[in-house]
Length: 275
Length: 203
Image (cartoon, rainbow over all chains, first blue to last red; front, side, top):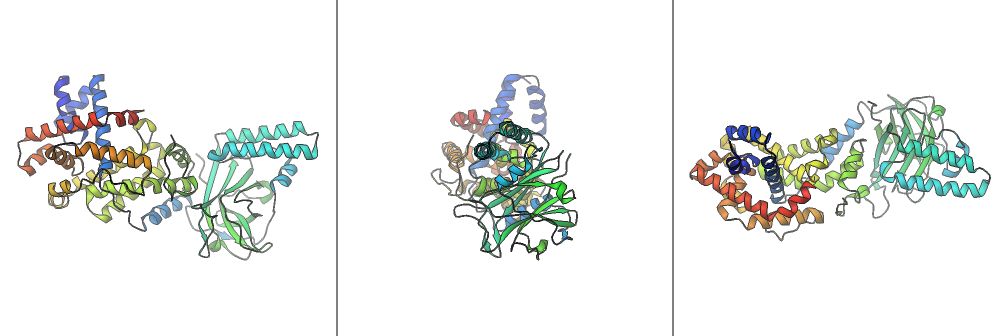
Protein backbone atom coordinates (compact mmCIF):
# COMPACT_ATOMS: atom_id res chain seq x y z
CA UNK A 1 0.00 0.00 0.00
CA UNK A 2 1.42 3.39 -0.94
CA UNK A 3 1.53 6.47 1.29
CA UNK A 4 -1.47 8.26 -0.26
CA UNK A 5 -3.73 5.28 0.36
CA UNK A 6 -2.48 4.98 3.91
CA UNK A 7 -3.24 8.67 4.52
CA UNK A 8 -6.80 8.06 3.32
CA UNK A 9 -7.52 5.52 6.01
CA UNK A 10 -5.21 6.62 8.79
CA UNK A 11 -7.82 8.81 10.55
CA UNK A 12 -10.39 6.05 10.71
CA UNK A 13 -7.68 3.80 12.12
CA UNK A 14 -6.85 6.40 14.78
CA UNK A 15 -10.53 6.51 15.73
CA UNK A 16 -10.65 2.74 15.91
CA UNK A 17 -13.23 2.70 13.12
CA UNK A 18 -11.24 1.04 10.33
CA UNK A 19 -11.50 -2.58 9.32
CA UNK A 20 -9.07 -5.18 10.59
CA UNK A 21 -7.61 -5.49 7.10
CA UNK A 22 -6.95 -1.74 6.95
CA UNK A 23 -5.41 -1.84 10.41
CA UNK A 24 -2.99 -4.55 9.33
CA UNK A 25 -2.05 -2.58 6.22
CA UNK A 26 -1.38 0.60 8.18
CA UNK A 27 0.64 -1.14 10.87
CA UNK A 28 2.74 -2.86 8.26
CA UNK A 29 3.29 0.38 6.34
CA UNK A 30 4.20 2.67 9.25
CA UNK A 31 6.74 0.14 10.46
CA UNK A 32 8.81 1.14 7.44
CA UNK A 33 7.62 4.66 6.60
CA UNK A 34 8.66 7.44 8.95
CA UNK A 35 6.40 10.06 7.34
CA UNK A 36 3.26 7.99 7.68
CA UNK A 37 4.30 6.97 11.17
CA UNK A 38 4.46 10.68 12.02
CA UNK A 39 1.07 11.26 10.41
CA UNK A 40 -0.38 8.41 12.41
CA UNK A 41 0.93 10.02 15.59
CA UNK A 42 -0.85 13.27 14.72
CA UNK A 43 -4.07 11.43 13.94
CA UNK A 44 -3.88 9.52 17.21
CA UNK A 45 -3.22 12.65 19.25
CA UNK A 46 -6.15 14.35 17.54
CA UNK A 47 -8.37 11.39 18.35
CA UNK A 48 -7.18 11.37 21.97
CA UNK A 49 -8.18 15.03 22.37
CA UNK A 50 -11.73 14.11 21.36
CA UNK A 51 -12.19 12.44 24.75
CA UNK A 52 -12.16 15.90 26.30
CA UNK A 53 -15.26 16.89 24.32
CA UNK A 54 -17.53 14.62 26.34
CA UNK A 55 -20.23 16.52 28.24
CA UNK A 56 -19.15 16.98 31.84
CA UNK A 57 -20.90 14.73 34.32
CA UNK A 58 -20.59 14.93 38.08
CA UNK A 59 -18.77 11.95 39.51
CA UNK A 60 -21.17 9.94 41.68
CA UNK A 61 -20.73 10.40 45.40
CA UNK A 62 -18.99 7.58 47.14
CA UNK A 63 -16.79 6.59 44.20
CA UNK A 64 -13.78 8.42 45.60
CA UNK A 65 -14.17 6.72 48.97
CA UNK A 66 -14.49 3.35 47.28
CA UNK A 67 -11.37 3.80 45.17
CA UNK A 68 -9.33 5.28 47.99
CA UNK A 69 -10.38 2.46 50.31
CA UNK A 70 -9.14 -0.13 47.81
CA UNK A 71 -5.90 1.77 47.27
CA UNK A 72 -5.40 2.07 51.00
CA UNK A 73 -6.18 -1.59 51.52
CA UNK A 74 -3.49 -2.46 49.02
CA UNK A 75 -1.13 -0.26 50.95
CA UNK A 76 -2.15 -2.04 54.13
CA UNK A 77 -2.62 -5.71 53.36
CA UNK A 78 -4.04 -8.01 55.99
CA UNK A 79 -5.85 -7.36 59.22
CA UNK A 80 -5.58 -4.38 61.47
CA UNK A 81 -2.68 -5.01 63.82
CA UNK A 82 -3.36 -5.71 67.46
CA UNK A 83 -1.45 -3.94 70.18
CA UNK A 84 0.62 -6.14 72.46
CA UNK A 85 2.78 -3.88 74.55
CA UNK A 86 0.85 -1.05 76.16
CA UNK A 87 3.83 1.19 76.69
CA UNK A 88 7.28 0.33 75.49
CA UNK A 89 8.76 3.64 74.75
CA UNK A 90 7.39 7.08 74.58
CA UNK A 91 9.82 9.84 73.71
CA UNK A 92 8.86 13.37 72.96
CA UNK A 93 11.72 14.85 70.95
CA UNK A 94 12.19 18.28 69.57
CA UNK A 95 14.35 18.61 66.50
CA UNK A 96 17.14 20.42 68.32
CA UNK A 97 17.45 18.01 71.23
CA UNK A 98 17.24 14.99 68.99
CA UNK A 99 19.79 16.26 66.52
CA UNK A 100 22.17 17.17 69.33
CA UNK A 101 21.72 13.74 70.85
CA UNK A 102 22.36 11.93 67.61
CA UNK A 103 25.58 13.79 66.97
CA UNK A 104 27.68 12.22 64.27
CA UNK A 105 25.80 8.94 64.21
CA UNK A 106 24.63 7.80 60.87
CA UNK A 107 21.46 9.78 60.77
CA UNK A 108 19.27 7.95 58.31
CA UNK A 109 17.00 10.84 57.55
CA UNK A 110 14.94 10.76 54.45
CA UNK A 111 13.13 13.82 53.28
CA UNK A 112 9.97 13.33 51.36
CA UNK A 113 10.69 13.89 47.67
CA UNK A 114 8.71 17.08 47.24
CA UNK A 115 9.91 18.70 50.43
CA UNK A 116 13.41 17.37 50.05
CA UNK A 117 15.09 20.66 49.45
CA UNK A 118 13.11 22.37 52.18
CA UNK A 119 14.11 19.69 54.65
CA UNK A 120 17.77 20.02 53.78
CA UNK A 121 17.57 23.78 53.98
CA UNK A 122 15.83 23.55 57.34
CA UNK A 123 18.51 21.21 58.54
CA UNK A 124 21.24 23.55 57.47
CA UNK A 125 19.50 26.45 59.16
CA UNK A 126 19.05 24.40 62.28
CA UNK A 127 22.64 23.32 62.21
CA UNK A 128 23.74 26.92 61.85
CA UNK A 129 21.73 27.74 64.92
CA UNK A 130 23.14 24.80 66.83
CA UNK A 131 26.62 25.73 65.76
CA UNK A 132 26.25 29.18 67.20
CA UNK A 133 24.95 27.66 70.44
CA UNK A 134 27.42 24.89 71.04
CA UNK A 135 30.35 26.13 68.98
CA UNK A 136 33.43 24.35 67.73
CA UNK A 137 31.60 21.48 66.09
CA UNK A 138 31.82 22.56 62.52
CA UNK A 139 33.20 19.26 61.34
CA UNK A 140 30.51 17.34 63.19
CA UNK A 141 27.77 19.44 61.68
CA UNK A 142 29.14 19.16 58.20
CA UNK A 143 29.26 15.42 58.58
CA UNK A 144 25.69 15.40 59.78
CA UNK A 145 24.55 17.40 56.78
CA UNK A 146 26.46 15.04 54.52
CA UNK A 147 24.82 12.04 56.18
CA UNK A 148 21.37 13.46 55.76
CA UNK A 149 22.00 14.46 52.17
CA UNK A 150 23.32 11.00 51.38
CA UNK A 151 20.17 9.43 52.68
CA UNK A 152 17.93 11.99 51.05
CA UNK A 153 19.47 11.20 47.71
CA UNK A 154 19.61 7.44 48.13
CA UNK A 155 17.52 5.22 45.92
CA UNK A 156 16.51 2.65 48.49
CA UNK A 157 14.25 4.93 50.49
CA UNK A 158 10.95 3.51 51.63
CA UNK A 159 7.85 5.44 52.47
CA UNK A 160 4.57 5.02 54.20
CA UNK A 161 1.98 7.75 54.03
CA UNK A 162 -0.85 8.42 56.44
CA UNK A 163 -3.74 10.71 55.73
CA UNK A 164 -5.32 12.39 58.69
CA UNK A 165 -8.77 13.71 57.88
CA UNK A 166 -10.90 13.63 60.99
CA UNK A 167 -10.83 12.62 64.64
CA UNK A 168 -14.08 11.84 66.43
CA UNK A 169 -15.87 13.66 63.65
CA UNK A 170 -13.72 16.76 64.01
CA UNK A 171 -11.62 17.80 61.05
CA UNK A 172 -7.93 17.48 61.81
CA UNK A 173 -6.61 20.06 59.43
CA UNK A 174 -5.58 23.68 59.62
CA UNK A 175 -7.81 26.18 57.88
CA UNK A 176 -7.29 26.29 54.15
CA UNK A 177 -5.76 22.82 53.93
CA UNK A 178 -7.65 19.87 52.50
CA UNK A 179 -5.88 17.27 54.58
CA UNK A 180 -2.90 16.56 56.77
CA UNK A 181 -0.28 13.93 56.07
CA UNK A 182 2.30 12.12 58.12
CA UNK A 183 5.16 10.15 56.69
CA UNK A 184 7.70 7.79 58.06
CA UNK A 185 10.77 7.47 55.96
CA UNK A 186 13.84 5.48 56.59
CA UNK A 187 16.87 4.14 54.91
CA UNK A 188 16.05 0.55 54.08
CA UNK A 189 19.60 -0.52 54.77
CA UNK A 190 19.65 1.15 58.16
CA UNK A 191 17.64 1.28 61.33
CA UNK A 192 17.08 4.99 61.74
CA UNK A 193 14.26 6.94 60.21
CA UNK A 194 12.18 10.04 60.47
CA UNK A 195 8.57 10.75 61.11
CA UNK A 196 7.55 13.88 59.27
CA UNK A 197 4.25 15.63 58.98
CA UNK A 198 2.71 18.51 57.11
CA UNK A 199 -0.42 20.55 57.72
CA UNK A 200 -1.25 18.59 60.83
CA UNK A 201 -3.76 20.32 63.06
CA UNK A 202 -2.86 21.11 66.65
CA UNK A 203 -3.69 18.28 69.00
CA UNK A 204 -6.78 18.94 71.11
CA UNK A 205 -6.06 20.45 74.53
CA UNK A 206 -4.36 17.99 76.82
CA UNK A 207 -3.57 15.51 74.05
CA UNK A 208 -0.53 14.58 72.00
CA UNK A 209 -0.02 12.68 68.78
CA UNK A 210 1.30 9.20 69.30
CA UNK A 211 3.22 7.35 66.60
CA UNK A 212 2.85 3.57 66.58
CA UNK A 213 4.82 0.95 64.73
CA UNK A 214 3.50 -2.47 64.07
CA UNK A 215 5.26 -5.65 63.17
CA UNK A 216 2.66 -7.98 61.73
CA UNK A 217 -0.16 -8.07 64.22
CA UNK A 218 1.83 -6.47 67.05
CA UNK A 219 1.95 -2.72 67.58
CA UNK A 220 4.22 -0.64 69.74
CA UNK A 221 4.05 3.03 70.72
CA UNK A 222 7.16 4.87 69.57
CA UNK A 223 7.20 8.65 69.62
CA UNK A 224 4.77 11.21 71.00
CA UNK A 225 4.77 14.74 69.71
CA UNK A 226 2.91 17.95 69.19
CA UNK A 227 3.25 19.56 65.76
CA UNK A 228 4.69 23.04 65.33
CA UNK A 229 2.83 25.09 62.76
CA UNK A 230 1.46 21.85 61.39
CA UNK A 231 4.90 20.34 60.85
CA UNK A 232 6.90 17.74 62.68
CA UNK A 233 10.22 16.06 62.08
CA UNK A 234 11.07 13.36 64.55
CA UNK A 235 14.04 11.01 64.47
CA UNK A 236 13.23 7.43 65.35
CA UNK A 237 15.88 4.88 66.19
CA UNK A 238 14.40 1.49 65.46
CA UNK A 239 17.14 -0.32 67.35
CA UNK A 240 15.58 1.09 70.52
CA UNK A 241 12.31 -0.59 69.62
CA UNK A 242 13.76 -4.07 69.17
CA UNK A 243 11.49 -4.74 66.26
CA UNK A 244 11.39 -4.55 62.49
CA UNK A 245 8.27 -2.54 61.83
CA UNK A 246 6.08 -3.39 58.90
CA UNK A 247 3.69 -0.47 59.31
CA UNK A 248 2.95 2.77 61.11
CA UNK A 249 -0.07 4.24 62.86
CA UNK A 250 -0.97 7.54 64.46
CA UNK A 251 -3.30 8.21 67.35
CA UNK A 252 -4.28 11.08 69.62
CA UNK A 253 -3.88 10.39 73.29
CA UNK A 254 -3.32 11.99 76.66
CA UNK A 255 0.38 12.19 77.52
CA UNK A 256 1.62 9.09 79.31
CA UNK A 257 -1.52 7.13 78.57
CA UNK A 258 -1.87 4.53 75.82
CA UNK A 259 -5.26 3.18 76.56
CA UNK A 260 -6.61 3.01 73.04
CA UNK A 261 -5.97 0.25 70.52
CA UNK A 262 -5.55 0.36 66.74
CA UNK A 263 -9.27 0.79 66.23
CA UNK A 264 -8.83 4.28 67.60
CA UNK A 265 -5.89 5.22 65.45
CA UNK A 266 -6.37 8.13 63.14
CA UNK A 267 -4.81 6.16 60.30
CA UNK A 268 -2.30 3.45 59.65
CA UNK A 269 -0.35 2.07 56.72
CA UNK A 270 1.93 -0.83 56.06
CA UNK A 271 5.30 -0.12 54.58
CA UNK A 272 5.78 -1.19 51.00
CA UNK A 273 7.60 -4.46 50.53
CA UNK A 274 11.08 -4.01 49.23
CA UNK A 275 11.75 -5.40 45.81
CA UNK B 1 4.92 21.72 34.01
CA UNK B 2 2.87 23.15 36.85
CA UNK B 3 -0.83 22.64 36.52
CA UNK B 4 -3.43 25.13 37.49
CA UNK B 5 -4.97 24.17 40.75
CA UNK B 6 -8.61 23.57 41.45
CA UNK B 7 -9.65 24.55 44.95
CA UNK B 8 -10.16 21.11 46.47
CA UNK B 9 -6.93 19.37 45.60
CA UNK B 10 -5.59 19.64 49.11
CA UNK B 11 -2.09 18.93 50.27
CA UNK B 12 -0.50 18.40 46.87
CA UNK B 13 -2.64 20.77 44.86
CA UNK B 14 0.33 22.83 43.75
CA UNK B 15 2.29 19.86 42.44
CA UNK B 16 2.55 19.07 38.74
CA UNK B 17 1.22 15.86 37.27
CA UNK B 18 4.77 14.67 36.84
CA UNK B 19 5.58 15.23 40.50
CA UNK B 20 2.40 13.48 41.57
CA UNK B 21 3.17 10.53 39.34
CA UNK B 22 6.64 10.32 40.86
CA UNK B 23 5.03 10.12 44.27
CA UNK B 24 2.78 7.32 43.12
CA UNK B 25 5.88 5.23 42.55
CA UNK B 26 6.49 5.38 46.30
CA UNK B 27 2.85 4.52 47.02
CA UNK B 28 1.86 7.97 48.20
CA UNK B 29 -1.86 7.83 48.87
CA UNK B 30 -2.19 11.60 49.18
CA UNK B 31 -0.72 12.03 45.70
CA UNK B 32 -3.17 9.46 44.38
CA UNK B 33 -6.07 11.32 45.96
CA UNK B 34 -4.88 14.56 44.38
CA UNK B 35 -4.74 12.96 40.94
CA UNK B 36 -8.20 11.57 41.47
CA UNK B 37 -9.51 14.98 42.44
CA UNK B 38 -7.84 16.54 39.44
CA UNK B 39 -8.97 14.04 36.82
CA UNK B 40 -11.94 12.02 38.02
CA UNK B 41 -14.52 14.28 36.43
CA UNK B 42 -12.86 14.18 33.00
CA UNK B 43 -12.35 10.44 33.18
CA UNK B 44 -15.88 9.78 34.39
CA UNK B 45 -17.38 12.05 31.73
CA UNK B 46 -15.44 10.37 28.92
CA UNK B 47 -16.42 6.88 30.06
CA UNK B 48 -20.03 7.83 30.68
CA UNK B 49 -20.19 9.36 27.20
CA UNK B 50 -19.34 5.95 25.76
CA UNK B 51 -21.12 3.63 28.18
CA UNK B 52 -24.24 5.68 29.00
CA UNK B 53 -24.54 3.80 32.24
CA UNK B 54 -23.66 5.23 35.63
CA UNK B 55 -22.62 1.95 37.21
CA UNK B 56 -20.55 0.78 34.27
CA UNK B 57 -18.87 4.18 34.07
CA UNK B 58 -18.09 4.09 37.79
CA UNK B 59 -16.52 0.66 37.44
CA UNK B 60 -14.45 1.89 34.53
CA UNK B 61 -13.22 4.95 36.44
CA UNK B 62 -12.27 2.69 39.30
CA UNK B 63 -10.39 0.39 36.95
CA UNK B 64 -8.52 3.24 35.28
CA UNK B 65 -7.47 4.95 38.51
CA UNK B 66 -6.50 1.75 40.27
CA UNK B 67 -4.42 0.85 37.24
CA UNK B 68 -2.65 4.17 37.68
CA UNK B 69 -2.20 3.43 41.38
CA UNK B 70 -0.86 -0.07 40.82
CA UNK B 71 1.26 0.66 37.79
CA UNK B 72 2.15 4.34 37.69
CA UNK B 73 4.88 3.61 35.17
CA UNK B 74 2.22 2.63 32.62
CA UNK B 75 2.08 6.36 31.92
CA UNK B 76 5.04 8.19 30.48
CA UNK B 77 5.13 11.89 29.68
CA UNK B 78 6.36 10.89 26.23
CA UNK B 79 2.82 9.67 25.61
CA UNK B 80 1.37 13.17 25.85
CA UNK B 81 -0.21 15.01 28.72
CA UNK B 82 -1.67 13.03 31.57
CA UNK B 83 -5.07 14.62 30.90
CA UNK B 84 -5.22 13.30 27.35
CA UNK B 85 -3.67 9.98 28.22
CA UNK B 86 -6.08 9.30 31.06
CA UNK B 87 -9.20 10.31 29.18
CA UNK B 88 -8.28 8.47 26.00
CA UNK B 89 -7.30 5.33 27.91
CA UNK B 90 -10.66 5.53 29.66
CA UNK B 91 -12.48 6.00 26.38
CA UNK B 92 -10.62 3.06 24.84
CA UNK B 93 -11.48 0.77 27.72
CA UNK B 94 -15.09 1.93 27.63
CA UNK B 95 -15.29 1.21 23.88
CA UNK B 96 -13.86 -2.26 24.48
CA UNK B 97 -16.60 -2.77 27.04
CA UNK B 98 -19.30 -1.54 24.69
CA UNK B 99 -18.04 -3.69 21.85
CA UNK B 100 -18.15 -6.73 24.06
CA UNK B 101 -21.86 -6.11 24.52
CA UNK B 102 -24.48 -6.77 21.94
CA UNK B 103 -25.48 -4.56 19.09
CA UNK B 104 -28.90 -3.89 20.58
CA UNK B 105 -27.38 -2.36 23.69
CA UNK B 106 -25.14 -0.15 21.60
CA UNK B 107 -27.97 1.16 19.48
CA UNK B 108 -30.02 1.93 22.54
CA UNK B 109 -27.24 3.69 24.33
CA UNK B 110 -25.47 5.66 21.64
CA UNK B 111 -27.90 6.72 18.97
CA UNK B 112 -26.80 9.27 16.38
CA UNK B 113 -29.45 11.66 17.71
CA UNK B 114 -27.97 11.48 21.18
CA UNK B 115 -24.49 12.02 19.87
CA UNK B 116 -25.67 15.06 17.98
CA UNK B 117 -27.50 16.59 20.91
CA UNK B 118 -24.60 16.32 23.28
CA UNK B 119 -22.02 18.66 21.85
CA UNK B 120 -21.58 21.14 24.69
CA UNK B 121 -21.26 24.84 24.08
CA UNK B 122 -17.53 25.71 23.84
CA UNK B 123 -17.84 28.61 26.24
CA UNK B 124 -19.08 26.39 29.04
CA UNK B 125 -16.48 26.11 31.80
CA UNK B 126 -16.79 23.60 34.58
CA UNK B 127 -15.55 24.83 37.97
CA UNK B 128 -14.26 21.36 38.79
CA UNK B 129 -11.71 21.57 35.98
CA UNK B 130 -8.35 23.27 36.17
CA UNK B 131 -7.75 26.21 33.87
CA UNK B 132 -5.53 24.03 31.69
CA UNK B 133 -8.19 21.37 31.38
CA UNK B 134 -10.81 24.00 30.56
CA UNK B 135 -8.55 25.51 27.90
CA UNK B 136 -7.93 22.15 26.29
CA UNK B 137 -11.60 21.32 26.38
CA UNK B 138 -12.57 24.66 24.91
CA UNK B 139 -10.14 24.16 22.03
CA UNK B 140 -11.53 20.79 21.05
CA UNK B 141 -15.14 21.95 21.40
CA UNK B 142 -14.50 24.99 19.20
CA UNK B 143 -12.74 22.79 16.66
CA UNK B 144 -15.66 20.37 16.62
CA UNK B 145 -18.20 23.17 16.34
CA UNK B 146 -16.54 24.28 13.10
CA UNK B 147 -17.15 20.93 11.42
CA UNK B 148 -20.19 20.30 9.26
CA UNK B 149 -22.83 18.42 11.26
CA UNK B 150 -22.50 15.17 9.32
CA UNK B 151 -18.72 15.05 9.81
CA UNK B 152 -19.00 15.76 13.53
CA UNK B 153 -21.75 13.20 13.94
CA UNK B 154 -19.80 10.53 12.06
CA UNK B 155 -16.64 11.13 14.08
CA UNK B 156 -18.63 11.02 17.32
CA UNK B 157 -20.21 7.71 16.35
CA UNK B 158 -16.79 6.27 15.61
CA UNK B 159 -15.00 7.66 18.65
CA UNK B 160 -17.61 7.58 21.39
CA UNK B 161 -19.94 4.99 19.91
CA UNK B 162 -17.14 2.59 19.08
CA UNK B 163 -18.68 1.87 15.69
CA UNK B 164 -16.70 0.92 12.62
CA UNK B 165 -17.16 2.86 9.41
CA UNK B 166 -19.12 -0.06 7.99
CA UNK B 167 -21.50 -0.04 10.96
CA UNK B 168 -21.93 3.72 10.73
CA UNK B 169 -22.73 3.45 7.02
CA UNK B 170 -25.44 0.90 7.79
CA UNK B 171 -26.79 2.92 10.69
CA UNK B 172 -26.99 6.18 8.76
CA UNK B 173 -28.00 4.42 5.56
CA UNK B 174 -25.15 6.08 3.71
CA UNK B 175 -22.61 4.60 1.29
CA UNK B 176 -19.43 3.39 3.00
CA UNK B 177 -17.40 5.77 0.83
CA UNK B 178 -19.40 8.72 2.14
CA UNK B 179 -18.71 7.75 5.74
CA UNK B 180 -15.00 7.32 5.02
CA UNK B 181 -14.86 10.75 3.40
CA UNK B 182 -16.64 12.40 6.31
CA UNK B 183 -14.22 10.91 8.79
CA UNK B 184 -11.17 11.75 6.73
CA UNK B 185 -12.17 15.35 6.03
CA UNK B 186 -13.43 15.95 9.55
CA UNK B 187 -10.29 14.60 11.19
CA UNK B 188 -8.05 16.54 8.82
CA UNK B 189 -9.84 19.78 9.73
CA UNK B 190 -9.58 18.97 13.42
CA UNK B 191 -5.89 18.32 13.01
CA UNK B 192 -5.34 21.69 11.38
CA UNK B 193 -7.39 23.58 13.98
CA UNK B 194 -5.73 21.75 16.86
CA UNK B 195 -2.17 22.00 15.55
CA UNK B 196 -0.87 24.19 18.43
CA UNK B 197 -2.38 21.82 20.99
CA UNK B 198 -0.99 18.79 19.18
CA UNK B 199 2.47 20.28 19.37
CA UNK B 200 2.07 20.65 23.14
CA UNK B 201 0.92 17.07 23.39
CA UNK B 202 3.96 15.91 21.53
CA UNK B 203 6.37 17.96 23.61
